[in-house]
Image 1 (cartoon, rainbow, N blue to C red):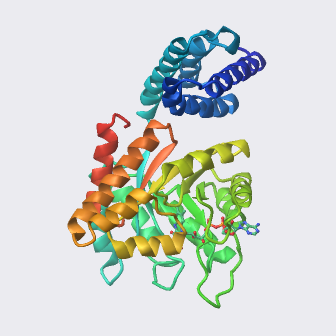
Image 2 (cartoon, rainbow, N blue to C red):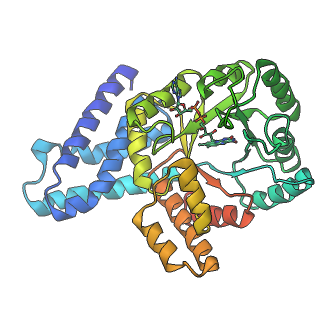
Image 3 (tube, rainbow, N blue to C red):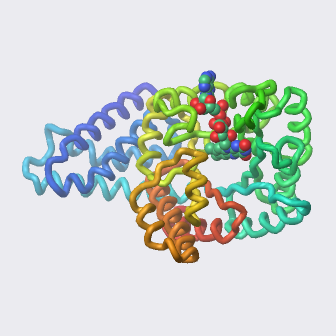
Length: 379
Ligand code: FAD
């Protein structure tokens, strides 16, 4: 279809889907509301999207069902409406599962501390590689650990890229990054064959002043101008310094406008937070893919630190697990990994653009996540 005709068509479909979703009177219908809400989210996205073959397939499948049950033609009986909703839900699930198989899966590592950084990193990379990630990202410490600019990030990215034959994403922070340091480091990345970076502000140490770049959106154009593919951070629950959700989305959009090609989120434990955030981001015109960053909780002190650093909220099921396994660290770790795996599978089934695991240099976490995602038929 021509683009204009197709836009009208999509809008009609969207309106039908929305009306049907709102018409959830019957119990059965309510149970299917989740699937229908997904359909609505997809419609919103697709309406701005290209006419790729797989999108057309999705549109056609759901359209057939929705067209046959526009509001004025909805079955009068409650049972009839339930049947329609179930059919639509099944179609959405079927298509979302076939789409989901293509979800990129990636993992994050950090430069190991200590003298033998590169040797230790090599072991971590080998372990992570067993999870067959689509890429491995490597952090760049903005703090004083010696792993910031001029540290091991570029060398480890090179190792990932060349020795492990896996695409690498090098994190790149504003903190202490002068324009000339950016130029030097970009050259080093290029020489190493690393083509993708994650542009971040980083966190200033107390008393430290920003160098040439204050915010990530200022650094992004510089990295783009060097020909790199540039990602940036996204915060489903808001950044710790910015708790106004609308401002959070405006800053996300500013990073896209500055040239960000994709986003990776801060960790979160409640997927509904992400679904709400995705909807708000899309409504604000954020079209760059957003990969979901998931970190398993492994122990009480680790989770306390994470909550303190990131401001992530802890849903009741996690609090119960922490209480249940308070005296059993092994079982708690296992419960944390299982919780993260379930999160990833649910996200995959909701058609997210990417799954990114904060594996904390522990390959068994990456492998467990990869297996769970694969077992659910999502990759
Ligand atoms: P920005 O996007 O610059 O935002 C920083 C703060 O400023 C936010 O509160 C934002 O809302 C606000 N803001 C943005 N623009 C404006 C504006 N124009 N005016 C006023 N306020 C504004 N840290 C590291 O040190 N090393 C890493 O390797 C690293 N990797 C990370 C990977 C991921 C996926 C994520 C999510 C975070 C990572 N971090 C890392 C942490 C990150 O550096 C911190 O969260 C940091 O506080 C914010 O970085 P940012 O790039 O999101 O900043």
